[in-house]
Structures are given as structure tokens and as C-alpha cells.
Length: 235
Picture 1: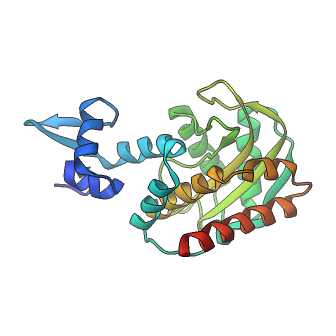
Picture 2 (picture 1 turned 30 degrees about the horizontal axis):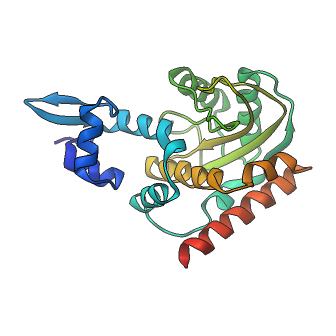
């Protein structure tokens, strides 16, 4: 079986779930897959896209197991990838298109974005494929897959819009918190999404971010929340 295709058992290990549960999801059409000679086959890229859309519905424990599947260490992941120069409070953007442009411009401040136009087009294409907006006013734009030569080291940019704007959330709600994720490794990419989703679940985290007076304060809130998350995970 190719590296881009998984059977039911392989997918269960990848998702850190029981194979029977995964089989039920597939049978109900909840997982992107197809049957070949009576057996389920799953495209890795389709599964990753599905995962990205489902992370907001995962529990903290499911997200933690997903992190462990993709290197499984306790490092300060978000803090190490989020440069202070790549944080904007507030953002000037008032539309989806202007928010994406501003986020890519923010990411350029890391000096790791070598082809901003290619990155912007890739992020826009990913949003056209399916919105990254979640139902609690947060969006996590990213590239569908790494683009060789466009980005150096992996990074995150964060911005808070001065006024919430339409970004395609399934519930029709507005979005004001944006985490642009640019990873050059697909395993790291999924781990970053899982770590962010764990932070979003923390009581009061998003409200505190919305009250941050400056970009510096916003980054401190994110770093402190991740440190507290890791400290509780180690206990």
C-alpha cells in the first residue's frame, strides 16, 4: 500500500482511535474514504483535510493523543513558532481577502517567507477549498501543503481584527482572531493545529486574547497559556 493510502487499521493508528469506531465513521459517510474490493481505503491528503475541519470538535484528550502521534514531545510549540514581530493587535483588515494579505505580510516579518505571493495564493486556495474559520470567532488559515522555496523555517503569525469580519464560519458568525500557520513539515503542521485547538478549549483563553491591549500582551497570553497547558499535561 502506498504512503498516500491507508487501510482501516492504519487510519485507526494514525487517528489514535479504535478501529471499530473508525469503521463506523466510514460506514456512516463521516470519513472521506472509498471501498476497494470490499475494503476501506483512505487518501492521506483527504484525511488530513478532514482532520483540519474536525479539530474544533475534538476533546482535549483526543487532541493530546493526536499531538503524540506526530512526534509526541512536550516542547513549547506555539511559543517557539510565534515571533513577536508576527503579531498584530489590532489588524486593519475588514474582509477575508485583506485579512489574508495582512497575515502574510505579518509572517514576512519573521524573515522566513521567501515568496509571499506564492504563500498568499496557497492560503487563499486553501480557504476556497474549505474555510478554516471555527465557530467561536477564530480562524486558522494555512497552506494545503508545504511549498518548497516559499517558506524557510515553520512559523505562526497572529492577528486580532479591530472589528470581527465574515470569514465563512459554518454558523454564519464573524471572526476576529486569526492564526496563520506556515509549516514545512506535514506532521508538525498537524501537531500545531492540535496544540492550537487545545488552547482554544481553555476556559477564558479567547476572551483574554480579545482583551489584550497590544501585540506584545497578546503573545504573552498565548505563551503563558501554552506553558500552563504543558504543565498540567506533565502531571
